[in-house]
Length: 604
Image 1 (cartoon, helix red, strand yellow):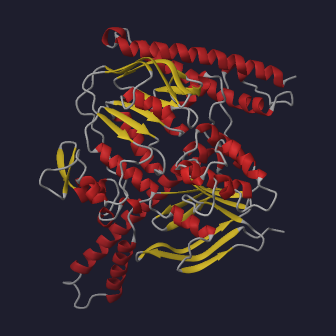
Image 2 (cartoon, rainbow, N blue to C red; image 1 turned 90 degrees about the vertical axis):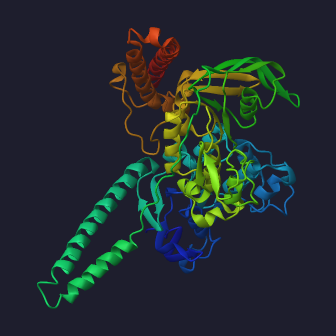
Image 3 (cartoon, rainbow, N blue to C red; image 1 turned 30 degrees about the horizontal axis):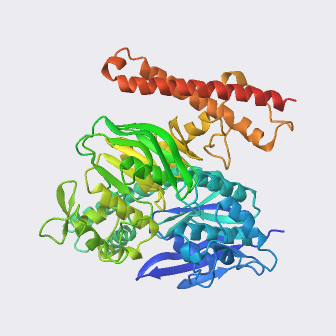
């Protein structure tokens, strides 16, 4: 006998400010569903999730949750006013005697339940809200950006919890790797329409492009039909004293249909201008160390950043990534050692705390009063990369409309605040971009554009992020802060760093993995036997993909180094490519040896 749905929305109608957010929406969540909820910033994802949680009442329609079914929602900004500690809040919905569940979850999420709420950061509050949801273990979990403020280790722990849970869940997240690992279905909100596909997030972009192509084809056909009917209406007058009123009405209906088509929101018109080139040497750190409150952050670290490098800094929360970044940019001094900057540096900083955004002022005033953007004697223009622009026109480049220009910054969503901060730093010329958690709250399309811009940017990029996919797409070097003052430099992005450490690579489509390509010596990979541990089984399954990627990278580097004039023309590129080739060859040898060891063990 089929079970009743966990949640059902029928005929949902909701408006904000007179504009419909949803019209006639029908939605069902079944037991065991693992759903990605995706859409542009401002499309209504969080609003829909609040309707699903019963926190927002629709103007019309019904929300049905069967008796006995529990629905839990991870609040973005929970009200903790009546609680003393984070643990008190997280345990507030549990039956008496079940408070130990919070301690179990707190260990994985790495937050202190005894920490007073009065001094807790926004990130600590978010982790407490997530801990509350996981500890309550509802049958349906609604998670809105659960990975924000989590480090990679905590994200990995959360992934394992969600993989093993029997609960259904719906997730909003900007973290592609997280969504690929966990989801089996996708809800896509686009211009007030919610579509569902019974495939995980890994298929979303192909699906989106197919839908949009079909829309474009239908629109073009409609335009051609309208033109043909309009030509008949005009040219037929001389041939007939009385026109066919039925066809005239049909033409009017076609035009009404065209008017009703809601055109897709374009991508943001973001641009980066590296301005005058910096010197070849951007930053040189020699033997720098730092201690805070008796805790060793960094010890005897030396590092050179050259023009054009894209350096990612990774590691657990609190290990000192932002501190190292600030030492490298000269914002704070190291306790020992020296930091030297190259010539002609122009630095632009993206601050993860959004501290440079005043929530009380309007977007308009915030831009025109920014000293770096002010146009003398004008209150309606901003200076954008050396050229004056009307403030509303520039905001439209970042997908803000005229009404939002006069709204306070505090009314913006997290993604909109991130776009506003990008608007500010992209208005100025820079040749060194410092990006501290830039991906939080941004939608997939904006992340794609930002990635492309960084790829074309002629300056240097320093990046702190826990977004594994974004690091893989952007970084050419990864600095891993491993605690106890250790910072280790690795070539490449996140997957390269993991491979060089001999760790399990991130699978590209973990929810329904395709068979991995096998190396030449592994044509007949046996199914892992019981002689392997759970972790070893997964490692053995992942290694052929790691080996294939390393072989492809080695071939590409070998082709690049085969140019006989490369050393004479670009000795630094030759050096870096040679080092990268040696590192990948060593990683390949290690991966092949590990595969053989595990394969032999699996046959025992």
